[in-house]
Structures are given as C-alpha cells and as structure tokens.
Length: 79
Image (cartoon, rainbow, N blue to C red; front, side, top):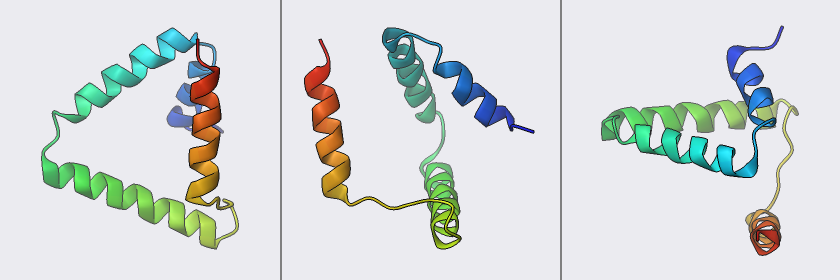
C-alpha cells in the first residue's frame, strides 16, 4: 500500500511545470517556519534514511558530477 507521501508524489507528476514550481516555492517558504534545530534534525533523519537504503541496496549512487551535468542539461532545456 502506498504511503501518503508516495501518493502525493505521484499526484504531483500530473501538475504542469509551472504548478510544480509554484508548489516547490510554497513548500520551501514553509520551511522558514521551522527553527534551525528542527531543520537540522529533519535533514539528518533524511540523510540517515537515504544512507540506510543505499547500504541495503535499495538505492543506487551517482557522482556529484553526474547530478550537476543532468541538472545543467535540464536547465538548458527550459524555455
């Protein structure tokens, strides 16, 4: 059974690029409401989760160079 987050992520794929961008802006602006310690704890939890998935073979890794190259290609393709 998909989690609420997985279902939400799936639904966001139905949004236009502009709608997804607006959603991202909204979510990021809401992060400012957290205090610094809460943000640090949340990022640490996320990093720990990702590392555990990587160690368990559930997630592959990519070099920073690959990630940035893909980002550059996608940014160049934007109108």
